Length: 248
Ligand SMILES: C[S@@+](CC[C@H](N)C(=O)[O-])C[C@H]1O[C@@H](n2cnc3c(N)ncnc32)[C@H](O)[C@@H]1O
Image (cartoon, rainbow, N blue to C red):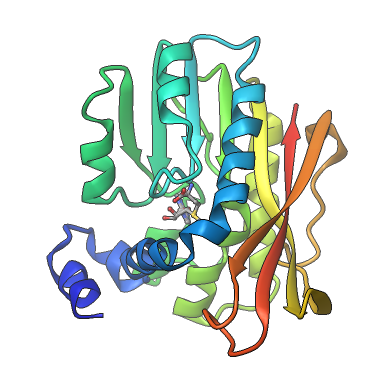
């Protein structure tokens, strides 16, 4: 806890990104990963596998959206396969800057993929714009990596926005993926489950009613992510995500 507090004080981070909680979330995810590492492994393995399947037949430049702490990114394989690997996140932690150093063809791009965060922070807008180009430098493959359902969480909490904003932000991201000429690999949570002794007792929709467009679902796969086995979040209940992978 003390270490996390120290990290929050000392990690360089632009003011809007820190105020809105992105740094806090990444520090929290690092700590949760350490506690739940064994439970997360099958999910992380599935993500890396799905990405390795996606890269077959593509060369050139790959752009990974929501690269985060790289837990689910097969960095070595991407670097070996593509001429250029661009990792995009709203914030790159020092551990990530260090992890990419051995790879001369991997670079970091710090970018808000919604184009909404700064305007919301400054109070100049409360309405999400159409999502900006997801790969401004062009791409042969774009990977949206466990980021779709995350896009509304911090903006909603920061500004108490109307409930309709959450689906709009996710819809805009899906539209931006559809507009891209690149091959698309999308991985997202599609259902949140609360489980007791292996039985699902409650379900929730992390996509707030948004459907993944059929044309992004040329190939699909699904698996579960044991995100917070008890007593991580609840004394007796496990929090599980149903995750789907899509390729177009
Ligand atoms: C659940 S994590 C994805 C897992 C990540 N690939 C990993 O292995 O650590 C979601 C990531 O999306 C990023 N993110 C959330 N909102 C974003 C936005 N508007 N623009 C860019 N990145 C964003 C977060 O900073 C976080 O790293």
